[in-house]
Amino acid sequence: MRAHIVAVGLVLAVIGTASGTVIDAGKDAQKACRALVDGTFHSDDDARSAGACEGMIETAMVFAPNMPAEVRGCPPQQGSVLESAKVLLRYLDNNPGRLEDAGITVALEALRDAWPCDDAEAAGGGAPKAKKRVPKKPKAPPQQPQPQQQ
Image (cartoon, rainbow, N blue to C red; front, side):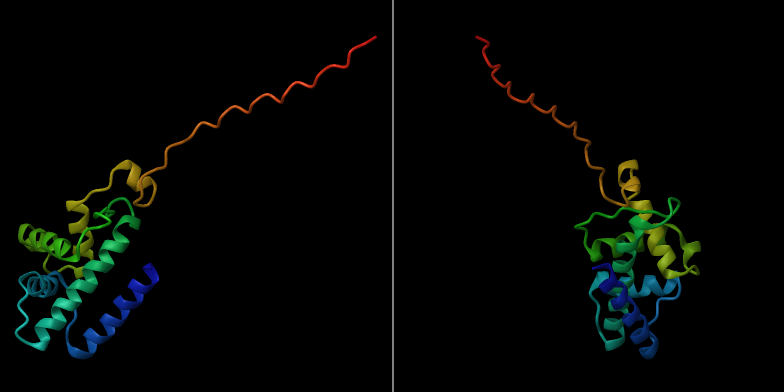
């Protein structure tokens, strides 16, 4: 599944480069994700921008739980791309100094701030730890009848 998302992300990056829709910086992410969240597709460029945001956010959602501890985030497994795009926009509104930083970096940090991992999630790469089970004691083998002596 992850390989497919990475492949789609790479395809979107190539298509984006060919058509001029690239999310290089936070300001590009802000514009593209605003189009996605608002649903304002007045042109093909707006639709491509929204698609670029969607691809970047989905990639960040997949990779965030597997990142180093200082940037690791644990978005909800059933969370939506739209919800995460809103998180990114809120993060950029609160951190305007990040508009010149790489878009994917800012997206990962926004997810980390919104959904930090707890110890169980971090130790298991985003999945909760399984409970340890105590093995049952084996039953004693049945007693063999002793032969009677005569």
